[in-house]
Amino acid sequence: MTVKDRVAVITGSGQGIGAGIAIELAKQGAKVVINDVNEQRIEETVASLNAEFGEGTAIGIKADITKQEEAKHLIDNTVEQLGKIDILVNNAGIAKDKTIRNLTEADWDNVLDVNLKGTFLTCQAASFHMIKQNYGRIINISSRAWLGFKGQANYSASKGGVVSLSRTLALELAKYQITVNTVCPGIIRTPLFEQIPEEGKENLMKLQPTKSVGEPKDIGYSVAFLASDKSSYVTGQTLFVCGGKSLFSSLSV
Ligand SMILES: NC(=O)c1ccc[n+]([C@@H]2O[C@H](COP(=O)([O-])OP(=O)(O)OC[C@H]3O[C@@H](n4cnc5c(N)ncnc54)[C@H](O)[C@@H]3O)[C@@H](O)[C@H]2O)c1
Image (cartoon, rainbow, N blue to C red):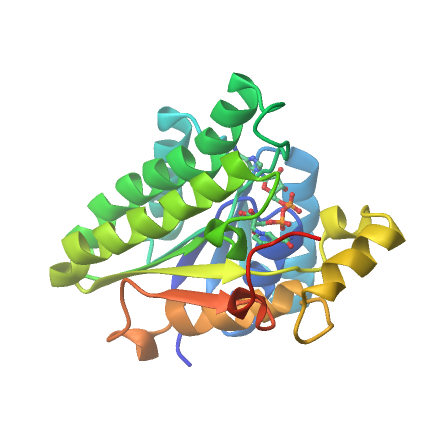
């Protein structure tokens, strides 16, 4: 697949799935921009990518994607430093899980701001550059939970919004050779997953057809295809990378 010499911005890539995506794109020859709100995570991820794949593979840009000026700075500064932006992966995301009776307005706003508004802001900022160069790949990370999951009203709604946003942008941007697709991870081994008590992990596995936990690199492989030149005829699609969990009902145990 061909992402060689492409410039990719991956939001929230200081750790977890975003870092896994950055590793896969870097392995395949892309220059990657590590974005996060956490400076230390940015520095560590950039250092490890440059050590593994060669100096100049990665740069870091701190920005909070919920703020329009910072989202714009992330994209414009990428173009200033690396000359262009070919690939945008909207990965930054948060969860604040509560059932509807306990969900506060702040829980709703925070999750919608990062997961949906942040995705809109970076897509908008990147689209100006991508339209000019008549090329682009946008991959938005949603979640299998957009199908519905108890205790995740705000999270599910935000991730469903990401699917709708991506389908609409795919229609608007297709004539500029810009594709927009969504990847929906299932349970992936990240710092968040490791914190779940053993009993909780066992419960999650009950609804898991493969009886296994995915790794950040599993998301990286799918994103790398959608980010490549080989995926030019794939747009507006929603790819589940969840070990078959989307086939089941969305009941939580
Ligand atoms: N881990 C899973 O099992 C799983 C499953 C389905 C979907 N997802 C989605 O995958 C994505 C990554 O998840 P993860 O588990 O790697 O999360 P994570 O918490 O390990 O990493 C997310 C990163 O995003 C950064 N971030 C948060 N708010 C930000 C902001 N406003 N601007 C820039 N960066 C910000 C955080 O600092 C963090 O480093 C999220 O969108 C999440 O919803 C994760």
